[in-house]
Image 1 (tube, rainbow, N blue to C red):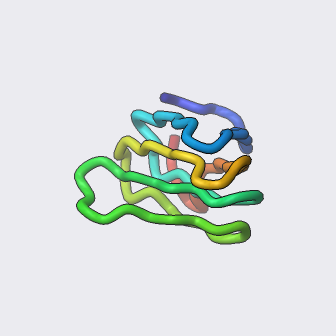
Image 2: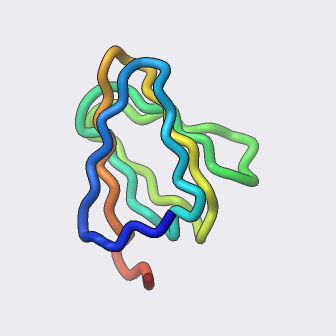
Image 3: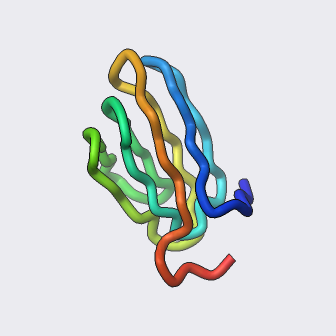
Length: 83
């Protein structure tokens, strides 16, 4: 998925999933709720609580799931990331 905007916000309900096939070093932040992040080719998952962020390494795919009743993912290009 190529997202060519400076900021994208995804609102997910508990159990809802969103797939970002080519996250391109994206900067992912939880602005509300708890998010479960699975990065392709990585054996460990990431759980983000409100206010926490994670930068996707390289151009890997990411699956994001909501663990709380409502979760909000803010997605931005990582600082210095090239499109």
